[in-house]
Image 1 (tube, rainbow, N blue to C red):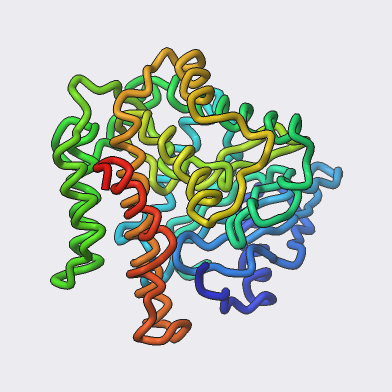
Image 2: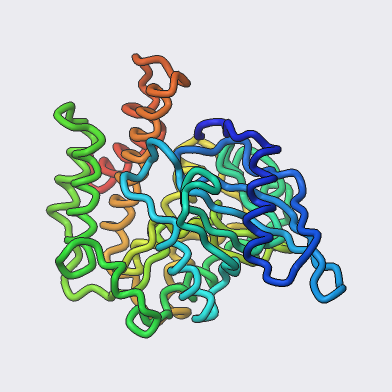
Length: 358
């Protein structure tokens, strides 16, 4: 959920057309189709989807494009850098990872109100988040064999990220903080994020999560690599049930790749157990998935239980932050418990009970 886009469609189309014409050297007759996108934008990067046509060397050209625009006001994440995100995607492209090809970027906010990146549009379908794909739609309507293909090719695309050498890819700067990437750095990051969201009004379930994580850090040394950050099938494009692209790299960091795998598996549990609905019948089990991941990467899923709780805690506080923003924008009443008692908070409590035997 996010803020309904308030952009003027005609003005946006004109600005994009003029900007693109300045980037297409030697092109003429540049035109932009009606600019669309998700129904809701504004709390994370804004997404604008459009077709561009032009003439080049006497021949017509057409390309489906997507612009990712930084939010121009309050956002879920306190630090936003769409240009840095594009740099990660370019490095992933060079390494053979399935990401949309980045074509251009613009740092001048005068064009669209904030910095933005333009990339190729990848054809396919994305499993829905709102309502989740477990409630209906093309994923549930697929055969078990198609569902299994979706799952395994999604995992294979994720594994490709973790085979990238961060140093060779020029991504050493993705380390969080000043310490060694891994559990300690992630705990420091999420602790700081929680502090900024909750302030002095501590949340008992989140504090319980922090306490559990602090006492159950993975035994060193941890494997380290590039982590996508938002690694779930809801951020993957599928064509004929095979993964075609990985989206949304704003949470990318250096760390233990197991945290990506845990995020992938956590959302599978959250959208089924966490919502009291069955998971798709063809989705393989988690033990099989852990074993296949190790085959694909050579990385033992070190600290999987730790990183599953971290994933649950992270998403719970993200929804708390989203709830705050929706109150500030008048979308929710001030006395809402959307953030403080969300389904993500409730599932975090369930996970902690599992870990403690409560």
